[in-house]
Each structure stands twice: as structure tokens, then as C-alpha cells.
Image: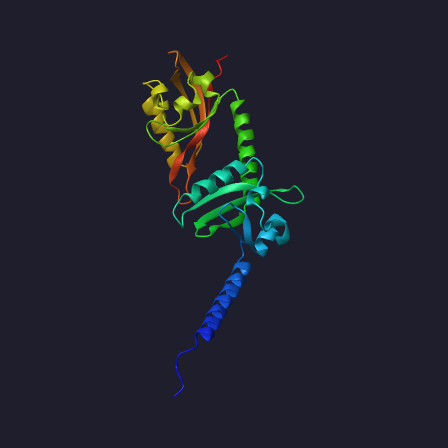
Amino acid sequence: MKSLLTPQKTLSSWWYGLLAGLRREQGQEFESLPLALARLDHQGAIQQLNKGWEELTGYSAQECLYRAQASFVHPEDQPLWKQTLVRLAKAPLGAWEQMQLRFLTPGGERRWVEVRIRHYSRGFIVSLGDTTLQVQEQQALAASHRSLCNLLDSLPAMVYRCRNNRHWTMEYVSQGCVDLTGYRPDQLINSQVVTFNSLIHPEDRDRVWTEVQQSLQASRPVYLDYRLITAQGTIRTVHERASGIFSDNGDVLGVEGIIFVSPAPR
């Protein structure tokens, strides 16, 4: 009767063939994923990478293999990368971190990349996602915001945005509040030192609240004259122009406007 047992040599050949097939299959999956991927050794040198890596960095596989990944990172970001590797190397297997770094292409172009790195038995697995456009949009928005803030701060008036509550809790206040009230923006925002309502003359507070609420309910602009008590204790008559901030369903989200010293009557 023929033995049902497979000879050891044949079994070994079959087993190693299976493993080789699995490795080829994993390599194909690794290659085809729509991400820049790399496997690093414990020192951070690149052992394997996919086409996505070449497309993102602009370097060919031959130029990258067995080089430290840090060599492709912007010099100013290299300390952060190296510190992360050291920290993760001491962490349990499976630990991972995420960060945003700048990579440099062969032509010197800078690309912002979201990096995720995971510690595994043979070193690290890294994925890279190009976030250059998002970062540039954020930077442009921040620059626009700074420009707008500089413009508002140059006005001889206090521009503000506040919640619609009895304290008139300030969420934004321009630098003009210093000349108007004697308080800095950081002292007024979120009522850190005083509430804006406490600066309104006691005899005017209820009227200001009532008139603002009536204007908001009617969805019309607010025009007010009332007295403020400054940080120095002086009384100043001011004029306010404001409007409500509404949600899509008409709920009042807040109030924004401008306050300046009322011109002296002629």
C-alpha cells in the first residue's frame, strides 16, 4: 500500500513554495495600494517601498533602498523624525504615531506629508499621504485671517463677535477695544476679567438687551446709543451697529458688529 505521508523533502519544498507564493502575493498588494508605503529596519533604513513612494517623493526605488528615510525629510524636521523612531523602538509592537513632515523631492520641491509609522517585529512600517494642497490652503487662509485682523485692529473702533447672552460673552474683539474700554482683547474674550455687560452703564443694560433681542427677532440690523464705563471709571457714550449671526434654520448663533465713540453733538 502506498504511504499517505508526504516525504519530508517534498513537504519542505511544498511549504517553502507556499511561503514564496504568499510573499509574492503580499508584495503585489503592497505595490498596488494607493498609498506611499515603506518598510524600514530598526535603524530607519528603507528595506522595501512601493510605486506610491516613488510617485510622492520623485525618487526611484534604486535611489532609496537601504538609505535612511531621514535623508528624504526636510532638515528642520529630521530631529522630530529621529526622536519618533527612538521613542517607537522602545514601545510595544503595534504601537504607532502620526505626524506631519516636509519631504524634499529631487528638484528641491517641498511637499507636506502626513506620516503614520508603526512598530513591528522587523522594524517599522510607514505610510505617507501628500497633504501639500491642504497645508497650502490652510496657510493661505491663515494669512488672509491675519490680514483681516490687522485691518480690523487698525480701525478706531471695536469690532466684535459675541454670544447672545446677558453677559455678551465675547468670542472675538479687535485691538480697538483698548482705546474704547481700557481693557485688552484677552481680558474681554470669554469674560476673562470682566463681562462686556458690566461695562454698560447700569441704567442702559436692560434697554440694550431688549432692543438687541427685538432686532434679532425681526432679523433687522441693530443701531444703538448707550453709555460705557471704561476701566478708568470714566463714562463714554458709544454708538453700536450690529447684526445677528443665524443658522440655516434661523437660530441665533451670536451677534457681530462694531462699536465706536459717538460723535460729539454740534
